Amino acid sequence: ILFAGGRKLKLLRSSSKDPRKAQERRLREIVELNGNTEYGVKIKLQDINSLEDIQAKLPLTNYEEYEQYIERIGQGEKNILSALEVTRLGLSSGTTGANKWIPMNMRRYYRSIIASAAIAFESFPEVQPMQKHLRFHCNARVRRSECGIPIAGAMIIEPAMAKKIVNHSSPPEAYLIENKEVAFYIQLLFGLREKELGMATALFSSMFVDGFKYLEKHWPRLVEDLAHGNLNPDLDLLPETRASLTKALGPGDPMRADEVRKECERGQQGIIKRLWPEMRLISTADNIGIRHDVMKTIGEGVSMCAPAYGSTEMIFALNINNSTEGVEDYLLNLLDGIFEFIPEDDIEEANPKTLLIDEVEKGRNYEMIITTYNGLYRYRVGDVVQITGFYRNCPMVRFMYRIGMLLNMFGEKVDQVTISESLNSALSEWTDVSLLRHYCVAESNLVSPLLERSEDSSHYVFFLEMENTSSKEIDLPLLAQKIDGNIYSRHGFYRVFKDNGTIAPSAVYLVKTGSFDKLRSHILANSAATEIQFKMPKKLRTKGMAEVMIKNILK
Image 1 (tube, rainbow, N blue to C red):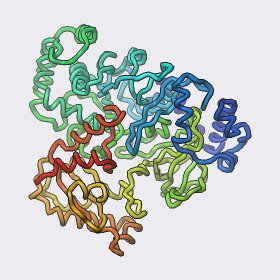
Image 2 (cartoon, rainbow, N blue to C red):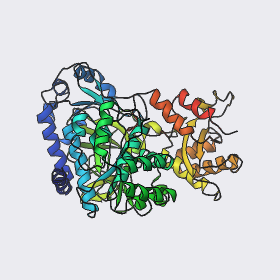
Image 3 (cartoon, helix red, strand yellow):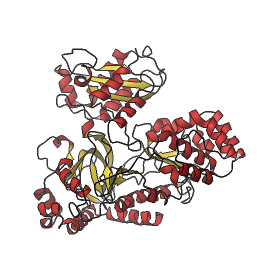
Image 4 (cartoon, rainbow, N blue to C red):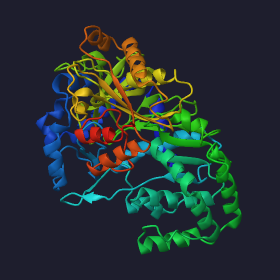
């Protein structure tokens, strides 16, 4: 795996010398592969001979363009969008709307993932390739289409794949468990058994932190079972799964159990390094912006990085600088697709002009457009990225925000980067209050009717969950005023609507501890999203989501 990943990484780096040439090569390959598919014939793909031809002859597309074709793929028709075999209909997370089915060839998708693994071992050579890893993973049930194609999130593990997982501390069965707490118990039990772990991983930082919250609460039982070689009889496990895991666990290890007990009794500060002295790296995508807090608490003394940036549609970019603390600038994945960019100011235009990979400018924001081997052409994924620099001649990008997460009551289009910076800057003035755990924001036209308030002026409504802070400790109207002032100083269009009185002062509410856990449960129960895919939304989009927050406001 590492050899294949290293080979792909080497090719990516060499392609970065002339990214335009690499993109032209991808175009020729895609045309040759998909030119005779049904959709390829429809759009006259064979007539596309250059990147300029793509811009001139093909329209920008979104999911609705492909939905009817994907339904037919699910029914068993072939050679529709791509000549590649569809080995999974990837279920998107639905962060900004309804879930989508994306045709995937998992062999091609995993090639990019193993390239990110090669980067990790290159950047942290002290982590040995066969040194075991702690991995937090909650699987989800795999559905099947009419013709039997698996329907699941991109990172859901199927049984055949689980058998190939050899360098993790838990046996394969541990990664097929669909209950998060049961999965955490098994993965921690096997992880705690091994003292020489070198890396800890989870798809998202939210799941990683939840894993250590579970340890904080349940370590006495884990220590007991580790000492005696038992599996908690209360765990909801299939008999054959329990038997296999019990066999893999082997006899108890009282000495290691005593080490774990002593470290857990000391609390969570620096616990990762204390439990696993050889641990060097936490590899996870920071989906909730808690990297700094992790590094100061449970992850003290361990590096933390996000290996890649991607979605169900494609792994967009790889983090080749992951040994640099706090840097999440990604090198575009030139090997798996074609990129175009819409300047941020032009996103709302009916037919915006796009720029090619060698036409973007450092420091500018762009909506990213992709063309893939799987048959998506000039596809708008909805992500806005910033060009942070260049590796050789290839752009490095940083994810900024999802277009669907914009606050946009009158055309102001305030992004979540601006909101997060404004909120955190405002809270920093209350030095004696506890840390912000989660926040979300909504437009007042969604929230005010549920609060049974008739308000003429539109405004933003913030919901904050703090660590052990009561509503009496923060002057909420003053906090709202500070937030508004920070947004005002950062965002020109907001400033216009604020000056003319169109946007009224924001409202801020503190919510009870656990409110965002309830929000997560609500979203998972009312969508096709899975636990492993879940990303806590920063903007409330539905009445049901708003109701969860309102019911949990601290009085």
